[in-house]
Image (cartoon, rainbow, N blue to C red; front, side, top):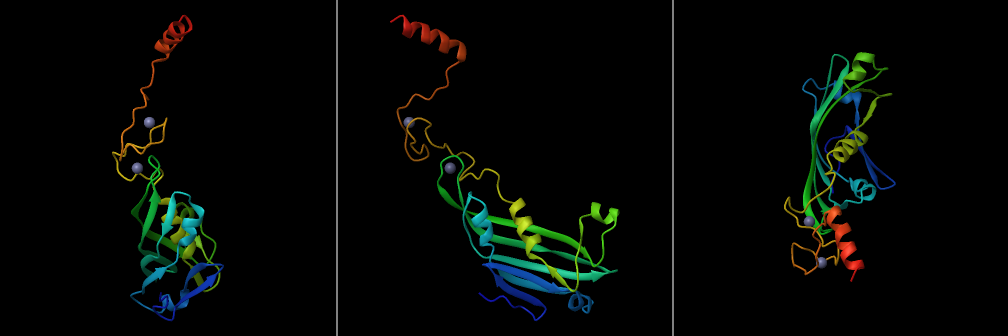
Length: 188
Ligand SMILES: [Zn+2]
Ligand SMILES: [Zn+2]
């Protein structure tokens, strides 16, 4: 994997996490801003989320520009992933992507800016990793499904009902009828 697309991005591996940092001054010096196209290791998402069985390196396309004293970072991050279906527990290939739209200032944020999710940064470096990580984590499916029509597993014998059928009677019994059934069974 190549991580360095220009000399203003610093990528360092710290405990297996790739840090994506951009330097404020170098973005500010470019009237059209800075374009980044990078591959990022986001395997931390796999480690932290049991529904993610595999997280492949993500592609990030980011534009950063400094306007009127604040840095505006926009872009898209996407990655191939393998999820575990919440109904049938089969692993399946899926995608994960998120749009970035972040603003940073090099001072404390005002109340108004806080409402608009401005973030305060110290010094000359803006670390985009937490922003990318959070955006992708928020975009994760809550209950991944291999297919909207996934039939799931039989609650009685565990057969994958997408592949096979079973002879278990899993019809839910009306609670009023259940009482009647118990009476009939008891009197046998
Ligand atoms: Zn499924
Ligand atoms: Zn069954």
